[in-house]
Length: 77
Image (cartoon, rainbow, N blue to C red; front, side, top):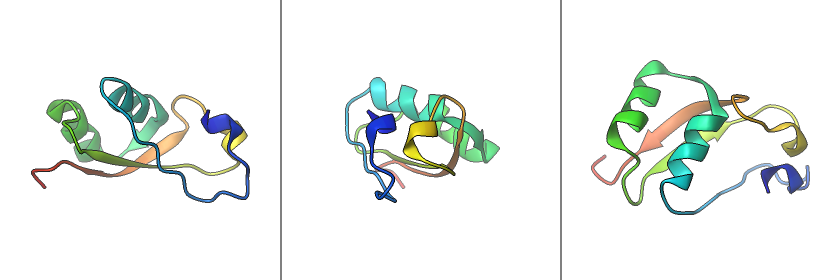
């Protein structure tokens, strides 16, 4: 679905349930601050968590490992 987003869209918010959201954030985050990635994987992506993954290029070029995890929050934060 991400690959079908028009290039005019600069920011995209995906909302969903686990384990899918954690798996998606992990799969897209080829680059990440080690601490952020460790925190995300250790916490198990609890309900109401948010991961911010940044990409360069068009939505059509988004694939596994191409993004960078730039932020991660849980309700405890």
